[in-house]
Length: 227
Image (cartoon, rainbow, N blue to C red; front, top):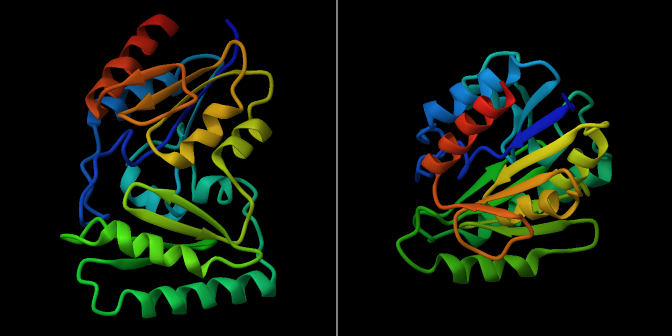
């Protein structure tokens, strides 16, 4: 049996969304299927998320058989180390984002080890306008990514695609994701791999699933086939 690397995003893929980001509904069927896959020979299972590793560990609720990688690949077995200049850039972006959201009810700034993230999911209206205004804060050395109700500022050139390429070895890859940040993973897949997009939107993935519940169905089918 050929080695298989199963990589899944977390939010929007294994878990639904919530205004309270620490209280998202995790799909128990998907997690159970991932645990079963991780127990099979020649099968490695990874949850690769934009969340910080500490938060991912708290929310995912998985056994050590499933590897957790946070911050789009920056927080794994070899965490990235920021320079003083990069730390200063992050603090500047954080300060400017906090000033931007004054009076914007429902908006918040998330502080992650390598990123600062503007969230607008809690806003009744004006969220997209606020995200567009925040784009003006970009500067040399800072990368921005526009996702679902978020704008993420990073001082590292890390991506999910980069992590997969560096860690796949000789395995075939199945990568499941739902957001713009997952497209870097779909883009690097080759023959023998499979990208799975959850929900609407343009994508480089070959297969599309309509919902998080469909992810559980897909993973259980994969368990049966792999067994």
